[in-house]
Length: 617
Image (cartoon, helix red, strand yellow):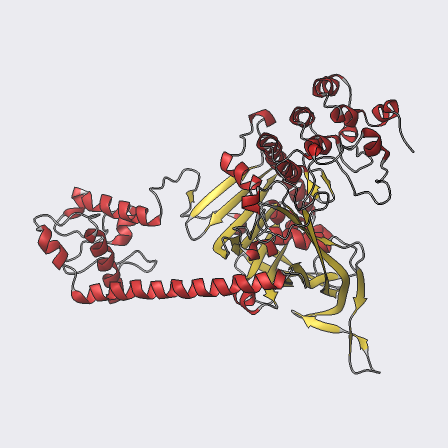
């Protein structure tokens, strides 16, 4: 049924002003009239909010007015968000505006949601549990590169601690580390502490009121250019048709419901059928020179959905033709969509191509079906919604995409029981297997965790030390660096060597003391080197450690980073390095070069295997 202009303006007042690009009237109406959040997020017959319509049409002033009024920048249609629609428009100014507000709203929600999550956890019983993550693939080379990790989760009151060694995925490589995240709740406020045990640094974020949106820093030019020159992609699990089926075991004729023991708990085994993985890619905004051929991002990055840009794109035009230039204005290619056609919600005439507002899309969609497997225990001593889901939300808030996938999966209507073990597809060739174990430290002892018995169910008591930062950590925000690690090493040794007090006859400075800028604690004879600091005291260096220190000092002097000893001629300085040490250094360089060549060869084979696995049959 066709609507009149008056009816459209009455039903969709904000949409109507956006459609006609009446941005001044729109801003005035938003400031003077009492529009509610429901009005701002009302969807038109095509499923767009006023903000998403403004972004799709490319009306930056109207979008700015709606954002200033508090419109949700995370609105979406068909899975595409406002940021992605702004990217597809190809307008850098519009993208900068929407991206800046998106980042602002994320931080704002982050500062509000984490205290709420910690409040929910405060009411739940305390616990300790380990989550083992295993990544598997049917592609052999991918399987070789897939890591595993065990997240150790401590929860007491409104405090949560998570230890991990798997930081993320970047530049074709899994990023390893040794990190601890500590969430502390204090009433309506909270703080997040990140400890890097390898670097000995700590970083603290306080969940406090942030600056106004107008004061939020805009994205850099490099970020905007990178987005505008890279296809956009979304990947999600479609669970609308999912069904759960109890697995069977035994010989035909004697089949029964399958059960398995997982970490000491008897579990029922279920299969989740009709799990669809949907992958969509759009590239209408990408210049032809940048859009042809594979992108620079590694294939595995797309598979894990840890990168904004896909590595691989086969573009299939939906509303455009192959001869159309994506740089041209969409209105010059086809008759514009009229407001009657748009707001009536009616489709095109029979035989006519689908038409929509905005730039004609160049979109590829791939759908793959998977089966997921669950091991459910009905008497597990943890509650999924009250204890585990808030932990998944916390970890998802600090950019852990695999935690977000797990949270989305287990928030479905699962069969009764706690999912002690879950095996779900991530993307294309990669699966994740998550297993809960060592609950309350019952399987193996854990420091600061004491298992107790409360009635018929086990429980635990956690010490305050679980949530302390500990000694020896420096504030990452105030740490002064001098270039990269090698530069810091050179600088520390050079400064320590130049210190007159470090050249007393009875004192020698070793590499470890130079890094700390300290003088040796115990004088040593000239022919002996002081040992590196150790908990047990200060003894003599081993032969290997002496050789290591001599190698470092000799290599630094060879590139004139360290001065010669006082009174030592320049010619004699080079003779200090004996032939054996030079041979060892040369062998080390050769070995490193050979290892790099091997890694490059393996990586090329991996990329080719992944490329072939993603091609349509």
